[in-house]
Image (tube, rainbow, N blue to C red; front, side, top):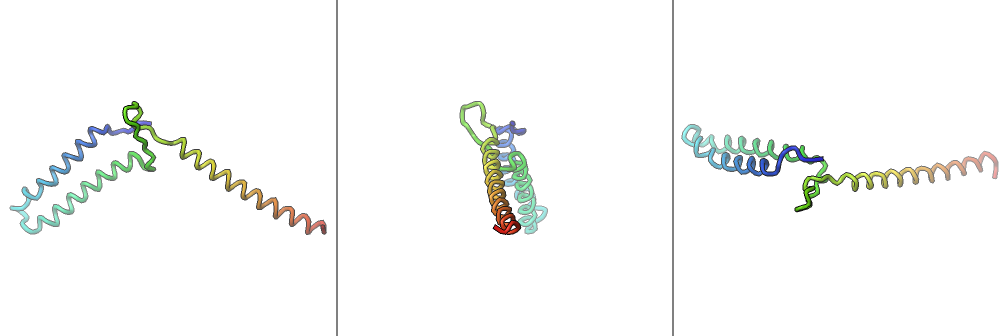
Length: 114
């Protein structure tokens, strides 16, 4: 599975957004005066949150593995997650079966009078 957004595009977008947010107060100071401070804060915060949400959507479970110079920089570690889930399921099922077997033996011995 590959990332939809190339890293160079993401870096360029982040730099452009930073420069734009840095210059925004200089543009708005004459027209808004002191209201410019909360207005710019709200606008910049909103844009940076949207950018961060975009990054989180690309890798929602944070299982991104970076292997430099391998040609597989965007490989997701799915096998490790699957092994952990399988191990957890097997443990739960085994524990449940052991509990049921103990209860079944206790009930059987009570019914049979042993």
